[in-house]
Structure formats: structure tokens, C-alpha cells
Image (tube, rainbow, N blue to C red; front, side):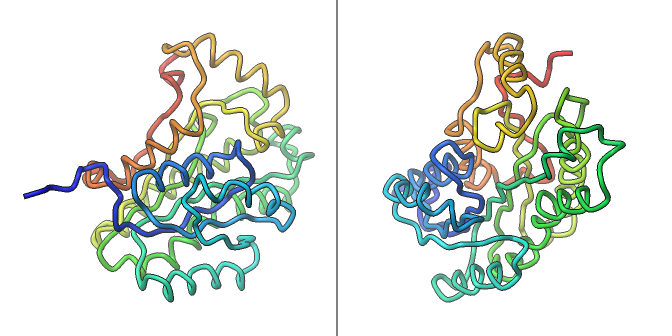
Length: 259
């Protein structure tokens, strides 16, 4: 009798949001999920990203590609309607997006605008709740919801600014969602990668200094890759991760343990 490998995602279906280009964490996750056997719908948030995302389809196993700006309720609804039509269920969802207005991000947290704070919280945190709400009815046999955080949610990281409080709210949301959705067999996780040289990271002032510090001080003396994050997502979604929920998994070469 052949037993399926505990890390296999064969037969699993889901949604990966936030594709931007070959350096994006969402792409690292989608590629790893495909290699583990999953099928998916992949979304990108802006029309201008399509030309960067289309060349990546083969590496992701040719997933269905859809535009989904999380501030556009019609686009969000269309993604989940398509998942309902295609599979009638979902096993996983990956929320890989964050945004803050540059002026608010580069200034002091205490000086951020009301509008900028609300926008950063809506796109980077509340959108995860909205996606989870739509995913829940489709996760009839349980499932796994994953979002992406950063160490700046826990400690003050120079120049991370406004995203620190936003990511802290995101991690708290993971804990509450895990408690609320757990009885239905739905697990909720945050992955907290170390610095990765992505286009999104380039918006953080002096990001290169942050990356160099991580590379020099992390116990493994290296940065992590989007592939590292993707493999962790595979583990959390797979049967091997079935007893894990509500936590933050650090994928940062151990950097978070250093003072």
C-alpha cells in the first residue's frame, strides 16, 4: 500500500495573492506549491504587473492568473467565484501583500497621516481578514490560511516605521483567526521572513543596510530566499503541518534570536 508523503500537496487547491515579479515572495510560494503538487489561482494586484508575471507561469505550473486589487471588492469576489466554479472548495490561501504611502512609511510613526495609516492597515492587514472570510465557506474539509509578516512587528527595526504597527496587528489577527476558525479545521499562520531583496523591500529606506546587518549577524550568516519561504509554506499547508496554527514561523536564518 502506497502512503502519500506528508509534505505532498497533490490534490490540494488554493489561491496565492500578491504576485509582482520573479523576486516576489508570492512567486517563491507559488513555485514551491506547484512543485509539491498543488493547483492554484494566482493573482496580481495591478494591471502593470501582468507583463512581469506572465513569463513566470510555466515555473508555477501554469496556474490560472487573475487581476485582484484587494481594495476592489468586485475583483476579490471574482477570484473566489472562480475557485468555487473550478474546484468547489479550497485547501489553502496565501496573502502576500503590503503597502504604505511613501511619505508615511519614511516618516516617524507618530507623524503618519490618518489616511495613510488607514490605507496601510486596510491593504496590509484587513485584506487578510476579508480574504479569509471568503475562503472559509470553501474550506469544507479544513484548510490553511497564510500571511507574511516581518520581525518589525515584534521589535523596533530602524526605518521600518509605520509597517511595524501594521504587521503587529496582522500577527494578532492571525492568533484570533486561528482561535475562531480552528473548530472548522482551518489553520491560520504567519511566516516572518528575514530581509529579502524584493521590489517591495526597496521602498524601505536604507534597506540595504538592514539586509547587510541580517547577513552578518544571523546565526547562519546568510540571507534567506523566496524559495525558503515557499518551502515553509508547503510544510505548513501539508499534512506535516496539521497540528500547527496561530503562530509566527521565522524564516530568517535565525536572525530573530539576536539582540
